[in-house]
Length: 154
Figure (cartoon, rainbow, N blue to C red):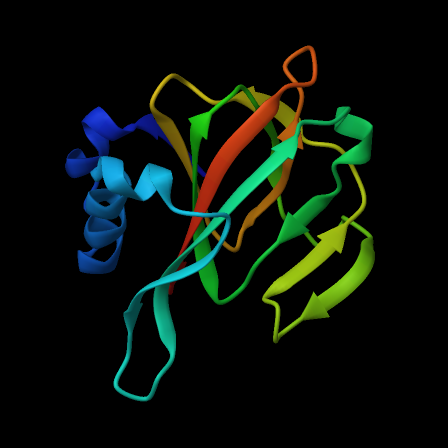
């Protein structure tokens, strides 16, 4: 997991797809996109290599935020508005699977709790396949958030 701010994103050398994702996040017009799925880049075979899911929701009690994981895509999670924490812990074989990995949705769930890490101002999280994470946690009171998750094909 990486937690940082957009001001420092160019210091990360994660490859051209991540650089394109951070440039997309810096464009103020993208904060106005409607809730939903937005394709940023596709491969010649039609695979979405970079896309954004814009969401709006109320944050919840951490016990109501299950730990999830992904295998094909990394997440870059960024708040346009509101306050939120993400629970995090390393994904290990010791964590019991509560919902098996779904290849089509690139998501699975495991039991347990993570350490709550709040978003810094203008901050982002980069979450990789080894990162079990529980987004949507209140800090400390529930708030409405407008958020984007940019998915980067690994």
